Length: 68
Image (cartoon, rainbow, N blue to C red; front, side, top):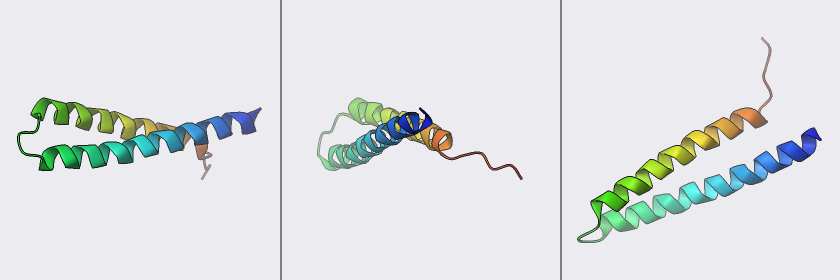
């Protein structure tokens, strides 16, 4: 049961990391384009920040707690 949950988290993590990389490329392309939509760039950056937070949360779930 725990292995299934961990596998699901790892799969979700991989999807989120890919989306994060894709957004990075999209933001760069929009910023380099003349007459780019500033509002669209801001929305993509906000989504990228949300993804980073979610990625961190999932990584914490996968990594076991170390009792010191």
